[in-house]
Amino acid sequence: MSTSPSSTSSTSLSKPPAGKSSTPRRPRLPLTPWTVAAAAALAIVTAGTFTTLAGLLVGPLHAELGWSRGAIGVGSAVNMVVYGATAPFAAALMDRFGMRYVTTGALGLVGAGAVLTATAMTAAWQFALYWGVLVGLGTGASAMAFAATVTERWFVARRGLVTGLLTAASVVGQFVFLPVLSEVVGRYGWRAAALTLAGAAVLTAPLMWLTLRDHPAEVGQRPYGATEFVPRPTPVAGAGRRAVRVLFRAARTGPFWLLAATFAICGASTNGVMWTHFAPAAHDHGMPMTAAASLLALIGIFNVAGTVASGWLTDRRDARRLLAAYFAVRGLALLALPLLLTATVQPPLVAFVIVFGLLDVATVPPTIALCRAHFGHDAAIVFGWVNSAHQVGAGAVAFLGGAARDAFGSYDLVWVGTAALCATAALLSLATPGHRPAGVG
Image (cartoon, rainbow, N blue to C red; front, side, top):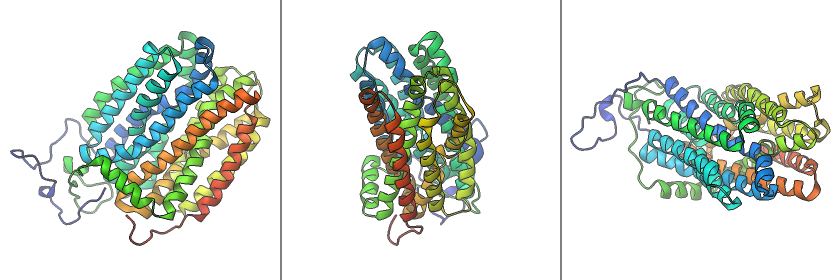
């Protein structure tokens, strides 16, 4: 999102429609960069709760409807791929129509998808449509590319920290509410859990409409850390075409493919394997689903600390080396997991949860920083495409993990294979150039 530094007064805002004043409109609620970040965090938390519920639905759908785990995994895979494919177009749409419109619409989509899943679904293909496509579209438009856009527009200083905080918000939605949702599934059924999330989305949407603004210039403010007033850039027409053009430009560079490959492995080793298959794998060893969900929630708690710390480190250290370290340790943890799963929660498994939690989403701030370094004002859209690779990796392992469980009766091969992928990602991270190549972005 490029901005023009040529003017330092509020009269240099983008041209308003005919007959309207160029004076910035004051919102009903006082807005600062930090309050906008807080509003964005609420939307990200809400959307994040949808991304891990699928892991709790595997058992109930298999038991009630008789679907195989592989068939259920197809729906989860569609959700993850659509989630990823939506992100770059959502970032471009935010440039065209603004974050408020896109985010409010996204929350409406996830609510509709959850309601249809709970009330109208009778076949596996409908799970792929309602949960896979509708929920995938909504969560993809209100997740990491959204966080990158907020950070880019509202902050000049502390970008790494803010990225970490907004990523942590996603983690809160993904993990911290899992025990509650698990309890709802156990007591009232999976449909009640889906409808509970739909209600949360419906309640959050109007709050986003009231509190989100597209750019600091709309409320007569400067981005945090800016020394001069920054006018709002003119809306960019042709959002879809722009997203594709940015992809074609980025795809001609080596850093894009290195970042996409490492982030695909990141998705495979988080969303794909842990968020989808950890709870069923623990249950295979005799652990109650509520206990497994509580462990995932504990991962989420440590995700918050790890992601915020990663954002702080990204402002100060080489992002490539950070990524390499994160992937190396994550791979070792996954390699050890088959030896740690038992019917009860033991200290070694808690140690795994702490380590994995600290590293789980810590890859996001350095990846966004590398996108910014290499692709400049197109960074949010490029990160959206990189995030698409993340979700392709996640979807592939979500499906293959379920298929492996059906074929071999165990998830052990899945953990070992994913650990090997993490070792590859560590090497690819070190191979990524640390500077912005001339002529890119």
